[in-house]
Image (cartoon, rainbow over all chains, first blue to last red; front, side, top):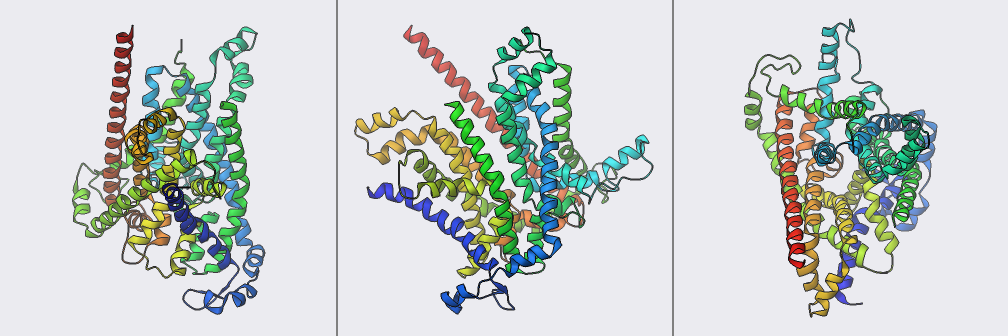
Length: 293
Length: 273
C-alpha cells in the first residue's frame, strides 16, 4: 500500500470519523447522563474518571421520555404529519411527473429546470413565503373573502394544515424527480400492447404504468418522509405552538430549557425510529441498481 | 407521437403554479410601499434602501459568504477524494463504515447533526464561531459533493486513465491531466451544491454558532418569527434573483456545450466516412 493511497483514504475517513461518527457517541453518552447546574450542564463528565462516568450512567432520561406524554405524543404526531404529507406530495407529484414524461421532447429540459430551480432557492425563504399567504389577513383569505366564498377569515396559519402545505411545497421536487426518472425509462410499447389487448387507457395506466413506476414512487415517498419526520423550520414557522413535532421539541428542549441530557435522549430515540425507513429506502435503491445492470 | 392531453397540461399548470406563485407574490410585495405587507399601497423600492442601510444584515451576509466559500471549497476537495476512494479505492479496512458515513448525513435530521456537532465542539473546548460553522458545513456538504462526483466517476471510461498510465504518467498526473478535466463539470456542480447548502442552512448553524457570528439565515429567522416583514421580502427577492440568474446561465452554458460536442462528433463522423 503506497503512501498516496493511504493519504487519499485516510483524510476524508478521519474527517468523517471525527466530525460525524464520534459526535453520535457523545450524544449517546450525554443521553445517559444527568442534568447538572454546571458548565457543561450535565454530569458525570470525563473529568470524573472513565470508570466513575460509566458506572453513573442510567436510563433515567429515557424513562422520563416514556413517562411524559409530551414526548410520545410528539413522536406520534411527527409520524402522522410526515405520513400524511408524503401521501399528499405523491398525489400532487405523480400527475406532474406523468405530465412531464408525456410532454413533447423539446419542453422537457425546461420543465426539468422548473422543478429543480426551487431546490436551489433558499428553503427558509420558500417556507416564509407562505406566511404572507396563509395568515388571517393573508392573501388567500383576502382572495376568498373578495370572491365571497367565506364570510370570516379561515384560520390556516398556525395549524397542522399549514404544516402539510409547507412540507408538500418544499419537498415536492424530491417526489417528482425519481417518479419522472422511472416514467421516462418506461417502454411506451408496453402501454400500446395493453391497449391493443383490450385495456382502456385508465386500466392500462393502473395495470402497466403505475406498477412499472413503483421504484420511483417508493424512492420519492422516502425522500419526502425521512426529512419531514425530523423537520424543524416548517412546524416552527407555520405550525405555531399547537403543532407538536419532534424536531421542534428537541430544538426547544435544548435552547429554551437547556436540558441537554433530555435533548440527547430525544435525538437517540428519533434516530432509532429513522433506522427503519432509511434501511427500507436503501434496500429499494439497491434493488433498483441491481435491476438496472 | 406524443400529444399534450388536457389532463397533463392541467396538472403541470396547476403544479407549477403551486411551486412558483408563493415566490412570485413574495417578489411582487417586496415592491409594496406599505408597511403592511398584504395591503398593496403602490410601487416603491424603499425597503431595498432600508435593507442596504441595515448594517446587521450586511455583517451577517459577509459572515455567511465567508463560511459558504471556505466550507464549499473544503467540501469539494474532501468530497472528491471520498468519491474517488468509493469508486476506485478497491478494498480496504472499514470500507462499509466509510460508505455508511458518506450516505448517512444525507438522510440525517439537521437537529441531530447540529446537536451532535455542538456537543463535540463543547467537549473538546473549541470556541464557537465562524470556524465551528465551517467545520459543520464542510462535514455534511462533502457527502453531497461525493455523491455527485461518484455518480460521474462510475460512468467514466477507465481505459482512458490506464492509457495515460501506460504512456508514462504518474498516478497523480493521470488524475490531474485525464480524470479531473473529465469529471470537472460534476466537481463544479458539487461545489455549487455545497455553496447553496451552506448559504441556506439555519438549523446546523444555530447549533454551532457563537454569539459573535450570526449568519444570514439566523438573522432572517429571528426577523420572520415575528411575522412578515417588508425588508425580508426585499432580501428574499435579491436572493431569488441571484439564484434564478445563476441556474439559467449554468443551464445555457451546459446546453451550448452539449450542442457543440454533438457538432464535433458529427464532424468527426463525416471525416471518417
